[in-house]
Length: 195
Image (cartoon, rainbow, N blue to C red):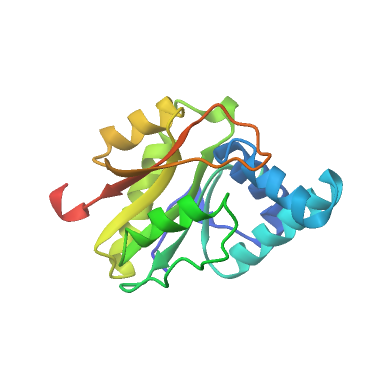
């Protein structure tokens, strides 16, 4: 893993509660919806979400900003192989557009989630986490950095565009019960060699 300077560090399993909240913020409620669907209730869903985030932290897939009182911002991601698996024919409709877009970013380091608690926004933490994502991508030998964002998340889109990301593809969001005002998933890609 790359070296990290304070306030940044690798996430820990003990960060799971804050990480679940952060990924739910970034996903505009989609994670909470999916966890509840899988677990059967909202409360059990949050327990499941915390368990998922603890596993990601154990796998070294999480970087957090922590000024001493726990995570205030987080970056989660993973590598997409050069030859991604085809989207399964039986993929649930809600997942299909996201999986299709991820497959269009081969050999990339995919930002699964980038989030900051609202009271800590405007301090450059998101930009610094994007710099860390680029460094991780280089370390992982990725050709590009990729991410998905909802078309109505204009603040995030502006941040990504300022950092050199370009919108390359879109797919219609199929909510399947998830309530959102967004209509499309947008695949954004950064080629770090052009920075």
